[in-house]
Picture 1 (tube, one colour):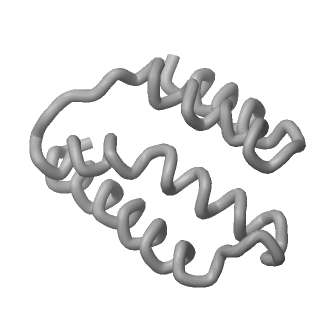
Picture 2 (cartoon, rainbow, N blue to C red; picture 1 turned 90 degrees about the vertical axis):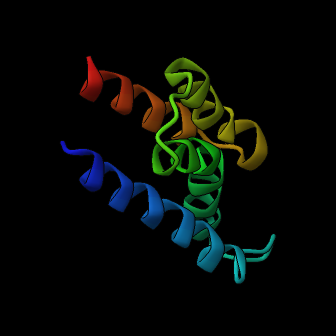
Length: 88
């Protein structure tokens, strides 16, 4: 993936975080809150990509897994595990 392609996806994560954050509240459907938490967990790393900086991949995956503690369920861990598998 080129740097431009990576920046495109990083910018999309930040935009999704902003857009979903405007409507995701405690009474929102679980999937909407999960999407917002996922984008929020990764948005600083997305900014790093846009700015050409590196970030700690394991810390990013840990933040994704920690979503379970915020929302209940096991989707954060599942997503983090799928991401780990995809990048290994």
